[in-house]
Structures are given as structure tokens and as C-alpha cells.
Length: 209
Length: 185
Image 1 (tube, rainbow over the protein chains, first blue to last red):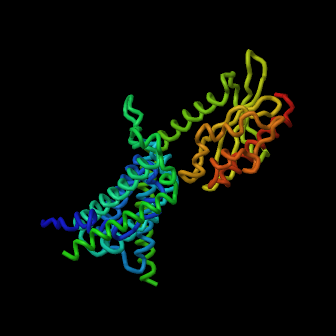
Image 2: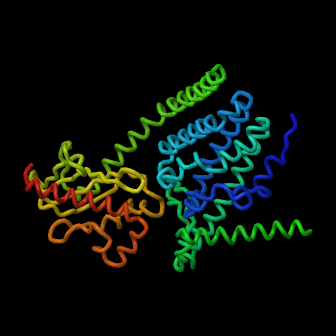
Image 3: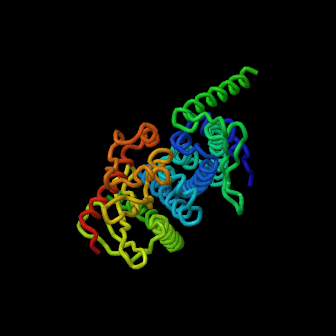
């Protein structure tokens, strides 16, 4: 069986869902106030995207075109409910931090977009690779935004508490001089704009070469 | 007709498998969540009791905001109440517990469950949020609108008016309920 590595790598840079395709911006901007939230949301999206692509690709000859949308929605909503119940039971802090954004994965454009545009037309293996690549790309984009916003907005990097470590790394200088707007919605939009412009500019430079 | 039946069967089979998977996951996670909720409720009751003895819970009927009450006592003497309260937040129902002296002055409050927006209404989870209502309900009225708060406090709850109103209304209703009881058990 030949593995098409391009399907895996395209989602990370070339077709990054956050900065290039610009999908799933609502959770990207909403939960990126803390790095731990970004990692929790990324794990949720990875689980849902991986299994939705896998199931939809495996069932693509079984589900007729006329009912593909309701069928996909049932599959995706079930996967999101499963991850929601598991997170609620076993990682309650992340569940609580993600709040309404966790069930909103159901309507995350990346999930339905990849199901429609890719999984419904390709093999199971390619769909799994696509899901992993897109989820990594989403995680990188979300984590990059969260790191910058939390560092500038609060002067901290919040990870997960382990033993005596409370999970919060305080960065000297930034901690005492936070730029509060970065923690708020306007800061998220500003940063997203700058990062999008940067990625467009680097993409254009590559094309020129 | 035949085609529609086939479509219906396909959708039914997808739904049946989904329902089975959800039921299986729920059977594993529900007991863990229930135990966690029980523990966090006990912790919240302990936190709002202010070190007083916590009595037996009694359910409260026909009240819009108050769902149950628990008497508080010190050395056998009844000194106040813990009330289970509910309100209509931005993301749906929110529940909280609050303790009151016998004359309806709110002492401590803590949010138990909610679906408020992270960064906005979710701030109500934090202790400083509930401190705005501490010692209100007696001579000092419960602030039920942002205009009744100091400028920094009003700024702190900006962007979450629905949550603030829901919490404030519930706390005020609790205070009124305790006043109506008139110190009786």
C-alpha cells in the first residue's frame, strides 16, 4: 500500500486550515486566551476530525448523495458528544475552560469541510492522513496564536498542572507589563490579521521565486 | 417510495450505531461525572458555610429562583441559611449556592454549574465576582444592575450583562426568601 505523504503535510503548511484556508476561526479566536485551552481544543478537533474522516470515507459508497449532509452531521455530532463526555469525566479543567466551544466543534467548518471536500471522495488511508495533517495544522495555528496572546496579554504560559507544578509559567517583564487588549477579542482579531498577512506575504515570496 | 425507504433505513442504521456508541460512552463517564459533581457541591457548601454547621437539605417548592435550603447553625443555634439558587444565564440555566444570615444578608456565594461564554460570563466562576454581592441584601441592596456598582466593578463585568443580571436576580431572590422566612426553621 502506497502512502501519500503529501496528504499529511499539505494541512500543516501549504493548506493550513487557520492561516491559509481560514476555516474554524470562531474557536481559534475564542479559546486562544490560554495555551492549555488551545491544546485541549486541538486534541478535541484531532479526535473528531480523525474519526469523522475515517468513518465518512469508509461509508462513502454506503451513504447516498441525497442524504449525505444529515448522515455526516449525525456522525460528527456523535463524535463531538463522545469527546465532550470523556473530557467532562477525565479532564474537567479543560472541559470547563473550553465551555461552549467544545460542543461547537460540531459546526466547525474544518470538520464538515474536510468530510465534504476530501473524505467523501478519497480512500480511508488518504482521509486519515488528511485528517492528521489538518488537525496538526489547526493545532499549530491555534497554539501559535494562544502563545502570543497569553504571553503579551497576561505574561504567562498556562500548561497543565502536574504534581507541585501549578501549570502556569510566569514570564518576567511580560508578567508585570501585560498588554491587556491581547487577552480580549479585539487583540485576537488584530493578531489574526497580522499573522494572516505574514503568511500571505511569505507565500507570495515563495511563488515569486 | 422504495428509494425513500432505503434512505430512511440508511439514516436509521447510522443513528442506531451512534446511539449505541453514545450510550456505551455515557455508561462509563456518567458515574465519574456524578461523583465529581457531588464532590464539587460538597466543597462549595463547605466554602459558603463560613465554618458554620451545615444541616439537612430541604427542597423548596413554588419558588422561581430558590430550589433548596440548608439551615446553618453555630453551637446548636440556628444562624442562617444556605440556598440553592438558579438563574437564566446567557448560555442557559446557571446554578449557584449562597449563604445568608437570618436577616437576608448574603455572606458567600459560589457558582455551581453554567454554560457561560469563556472570557465573558464565565468570569462569574471566580471568587472576586461574587465578592461584589457580599454583605448585600440588608441595609445595602443587592446590586441588580451595573449602575449600582462602582466604576471598576462595572468595568469588570462588562460584556456579560446577562450573566451578571442572572446572578444578581438569584441572589436578591434568595435574600428576599430568607427575609420572608423571618428567622423561622
